[in-house]
Length: 98
Image 1 (cartoon, rainbow, N blue to C red):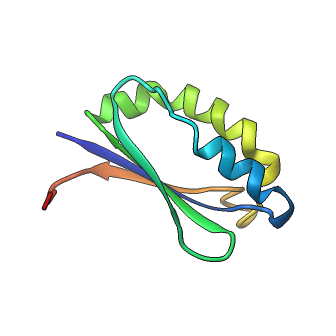
Image 2 (cartoon, rainbow, N blue to C red):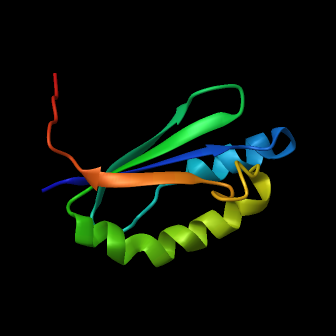
């Protein structure tokens, strides 16, 4: 079953261009079928990954954290509890392609 992860974050205005540039580079994680980033506000975004399976997401976490560490200083803290990201993930139970 396909699996998805979604990460909400806010880019610091002063770092917007450099973070967007890094986010625009291909991410070659094993099992990642495709990904995209949605601009949801002036500096707020959501990154979406579609994966072959949950195990692929789990196995890619160390690489994803390494990538996050490369842009972490360019992100605003969302809250003390969350830090700089608000991540969720789960199985895809419906998909429609026109």
